[in-house]
Image (cartoon, rainbow, N blue to C red):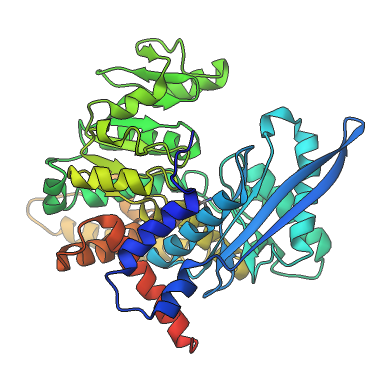
Length: 475
Ligand code: GLU
């Protein structure tokens, strides 16, 4: 359950206010950036199971300093106007921080998607999309949704198709939404993108011993004990990559029905399968079960990854959370009150606006791909391979003239000769984005004593970019 004093938006605004107090912005511009520009509420009826069911949906636009505005659509019974507005604001700050050229938006539909059959969900989604499309609240140039909690590729494909049916001559129609399946205009690596971004963010943090020292950590990600809350798309991919590729140890996973923990580490791929088959983590072999899952947020570990809902670390439990490093894979998992408590005890928080920006970053690549109508790497790949082959041939020719003959290993040749395809390029672009954004944040973090934490630093970077963009428009 989310616990925010005064609501989610109030929490985001409190964090914004803390940061903006360190800037020299006019009160007018400070207010203009903070407020949510508009929220559209729609109630529509769909005839299902012999009766008319009325659904309530939202699309909120926080800032249009750049267009299109960008942000996911969430399907959950907990969706409400305050939540959508807070999430839209976070999208604004996130996009500015990772330099994706978008304003911030978010959408939501009050629905429990598990209660409906796929063909019913399709009807509901198409109708919701229709309501938004006819008001230009889904449009490649103005407002581009994406998946969020409770939605995925399937819903994005329906939305894209709905837009194209209603705009048959729009050659850029597919760019009206991102997170689509690959065969419907999607991009390689979008599903894993947010989790991959969390991994790249942690790798970047661990490249800076001074920053690790602030959290009281040293060494590498190898062997670090991680607690993950939420094994959805983001939490699962992050945990799987960090354990399989970086040698980190997932010591606890918190899910809806409780938590499982094991000091020896949990195989998250197997646990993921177990959840699919059994509907929860209970009964997972080789790990202990704890019915009161939230208790594990307080477990002894090196890194805590809240990857589910907002407000899970709040005034009521923050003092008991002992992790030296928290990386916010979810949007808003730490309330403003909890943030203050954690900062006071020296916990380092890698903030949501940076940590989970991998999703929107790869969405940006997908949008560009749709507008350019060509897959990344299609033109260059073989040319790159041919140039590499020229070099390998020349090296091999030279080696033959030496007294001591040497050869290039087959593994080297295989790796070196392979030109980058779309997935490699997407990962490279994402890695670069995560590294640059961290660099921008940490520079501000270390340059000014008053900037005591990464969240404030992130806000400073992002607010100054948004302010510059408003000022350039003459506002
Ligand atoms: N829903 C994701 C987020 O919160 C992705 C948004 C997007 O790709 O536009 O960042």
